[in-house]
Amino acid sequence: MVDAYVAPLVITCIWAFVGIICPFFARGASKGVTQCCLMLAAATCWLFWLCCYMTQMNPLIGPSLKRNQIMIIAREWGHEIKNVTSEMH
Image 1: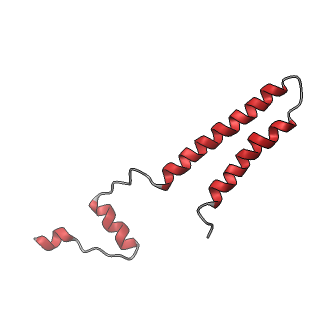
Image 2: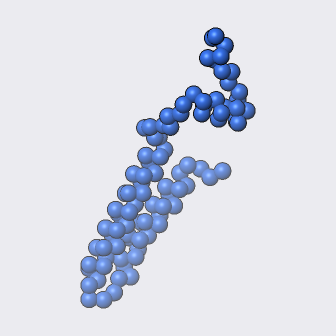
Image 3: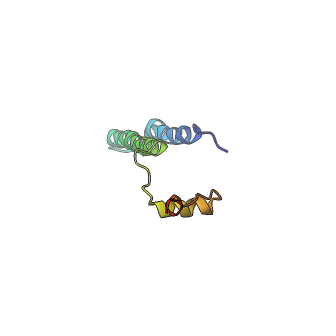
């Protein structure tokens, strides 16, 4: 299995290439504008990706399931839960 640090490292390298290396290859009359656009696009895209990635690492809100849904999932996964309400009657 791939380690947890590989995905952020790869994406960071890609956006670093776009923001640091690619501006050196800009040509034409508007070279400065092109370089600025490449650097800003790389920085903002990387930051947006990082925020999305980090929010998925530790979500604040989990799924809210009803009791029947939990029982069905437990049965399908092989962890049968006895129905507590039927034993109380």
